[in-house]
Length: 305
Image 1: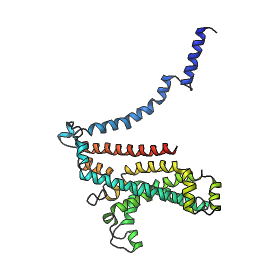
Image 2: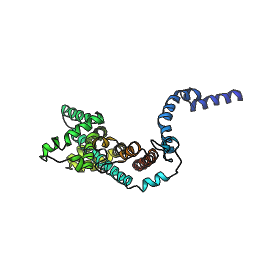
Image 3: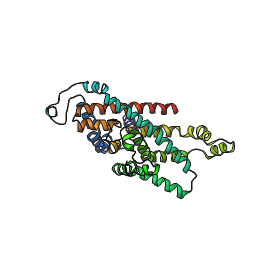
């Protein structure tokens, strides 16, 4: 074989190694171009636009809507010094901790653990009811909970005999935490049901034979096997809850900002107050907070690995 043929053969092998499908660079780019275009139009451009107007005094109406001026980091400084923003940040952390990290995690695991040995008919019925709460539109769920928590004739007051209690006014954050836990538990239940199926039955049987309690079995046998699933589930539901707009449907942030989580605060600043630049800056701060939370969970996952 001549040196030229050897060189040509090496070139073919190298091209094959870098392009297993044999499409070539131009064809490969052509295949992914539509997806890249959609990502650029609906994700990258809005993100860049949000960052830009967050650096301006852009407003919904008035002169600043026509010719906004760059204000640099003033919007971010004003947000960090804003008592209402600090209140919304605290309420968002409380909402995520109470309804996602604790509520959905624990209730989802308890349902998955309890139903693993239930009769098929009972298991399917409970799973269907839990899934129904998850797949119903937010507006429908909000109206259902209005009927439950209504001060006059509400289902909860009728059951507790506490006529006249305005739950959404007197206990707004507690109501939102219970509402979001009830609504979002389905995802955790399904994920943990799948994770529990991978736990070796022999180890569970050994724990039962030696007399381990249910908590000891979960702590020493089950949790080490599903730790990665717990972290993944907690990451996802935490991010979803932090960006959830459903609280607005129940309380609209009231009374007196007592349930105004960050998504609701951003909405009210942007569309009710007309401060689009300020609201965009807060949106960027929320995005950065989400990235920090995601980085922490990914670090924990690497430690687990």
